[in-house]
Amino acid sequence: MTTTTALDVALEARGIRSGYDRRNVVDGVSIAIPTGSITCLVGPNGSGKSTLLKSCARLLSLSSGAVYLGGDLLSALPSRAIAQRMAILPQGPAAPEQMTVRELVEQGRYPHAGPARMLRRQDHQAVADALRATGLSSFANRDVNHLSGGERQRAWIALALAQDTPILLLDEPTTCLDLGYQMDVLELVQKLNRDKQLTVVMVVHDLNHATAFADHLLVLDNGAIVAEGPPEEAITRDLLRAVFRVDADVITHPRTGKTTVLPVGSAH
Image 1 (cartoon, helix red, strand yellow):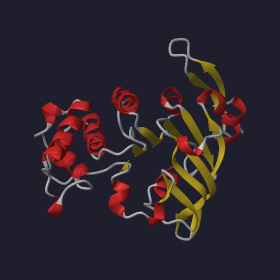
Image 2 (cartoon, helix red, strand yellow):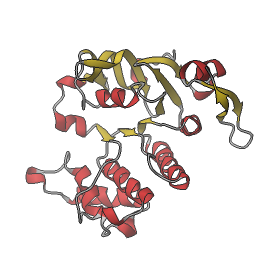
Image 3 (tube, helix red, strand yellow):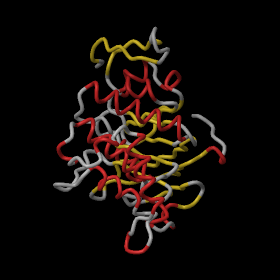
């Protein structure tokens, strides 16, 4: 596994167990998320990716273990303090009817707002900056629910960006999007990571998207981490056969230089 010093760790889990209906889906997992990285959680369906992400965001209770945010015990922090330091975009979020893009993005400022959630000048500036960064300034007064899938997802990312946290958690941000919109969203996340030094942790279903955009991979299977590290180290033919049950070649893409998986057939 990759060794990371304490100063380089943005988010850490130590021996956590969590799940649903008294059944642990994540079982004794320890991870250290490098500061400033894009870390992708990958694995087959039901492997515990979303459960791990939710556990690290305190959206699920732990049956054992602990999560640390910048060295602070997450369970001891007030919810407002967490929201000022970490934003999470869940899978398939829905906006109320007739909510505009600007109104949606303004919700990201509530952890910073004054009494009665009154937005101040700096809050309105943060909203404007988030709309600009996501290419949505001209959509500010549009109904969120009238946007295309890719535009709607960018609006939710703008909300998280307006929250102005150093850490952003994303649960399958490209679900149900056409391929072009998927690339649009992933390229936006990468740009925000590079420009704003955001630490990004996201669950990604498509393995080639993960290897193309991640600095650091965490591969899960049956609630445990089975591989970790840069894509070129974590993804091997043996791992693909054992974890994803697929026979595949692993190559370096001739145009991008990224690790790329070429499935050949199922592995039994």
